[in-house]
Amino acid sequence: MKFKVALAGNPNSGKTTLFNCLTGSNLYVGNWPGVTVEKKEGDLKNTSEKITLVDLPGIYSLAPYSMDEIVSRNFLLEERPDLIINIIDASNIERNLYLTTQLMELDCPMVGALNMMDVVQKKGVEIDADALEKLFGFPFVEISAQQETGIDGLIKMVERIVKNDKKQEFPKIFPEQINEIFKEFENLLQNKFPNVLPDYPRIFRAVKLIEKDDEVLSKIDDCSILLEDIEKTRKKIEVFSGNDVDSAIADYRYRFITATINLATRKTKENAQQFQ
Ligand code: GDP
Ligand code: K
Ligand code: MG
Image (cartoon, rainbow, N blue to C red; front, top):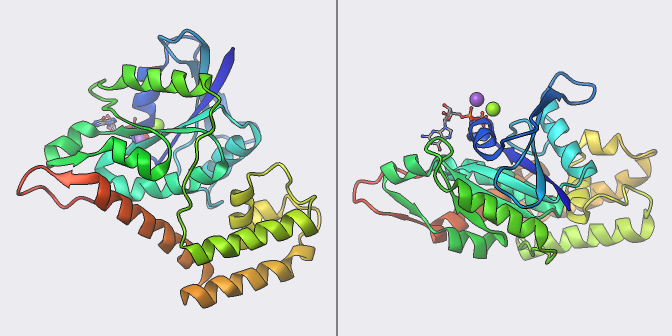
């Protein structure tokens, strides 16, 4: 069997360092089609199956603000890798998990690589990877790409997940009422507009249309037919949240992250630095 795994994470989370730790042979470096964004691929080392790792451009979100974000998300949507390794700078865990909550909407198996654990330990903070797994619905492995610790464990975990076809179940991260609004909109798409991006992951499609994401709208032949239903849905979110749609969605993501961090991290020193 051959498998394809994507490495996704924020800029400066240690992606290049980790990529070099994980890959041995068959290195390919080029550009993504049509753009001057670097594309790098290599095979994972020490595996019994052929597992190709694709390094995605570093991104903070799956919003279409930059070419890097568009390249990354189109790859994840169109190539459907067997697994995403989501590298997280664990010393900035809150900001890094923002992308994680978006990757969870792509309906693709994931493993979280908690990088920079050497920095976290120096700060006097402990992260409970098992607790994170329970809260997020996919496993986390603590590593330091720079010190090359935890790498074998990460490779074993990747191999185990790609060979196992049991689906991961990701939790709903928004408040119940917001989940209901998304669900209603998903059902409406399903029933009234079955030809609109039928291959997209359902929750991702709903959220991006509600956000009026230009890139996603541009992929629909005639998106004007949807606008009235989108506006009605936006109104419901605004009324419930008392906020504009983009801020409300970002705010709910951060609330979920803050709650999970409170449950899954612990200071190990009296004078542990403020953990962000
Ligand atoms: P990228 O932008 O995501 O590709 O990140 P890089 O791999 O270039 O790493 C950014 C910086 O973080 C570099 O200076 C790395 O040496 C450093 N770095 C990467 N991983 C670790 C780690 O586990 N611990 C520490 N202390 N530094 C790391
Ligand atoms: K960098
Ligand atoms: Mg890099």
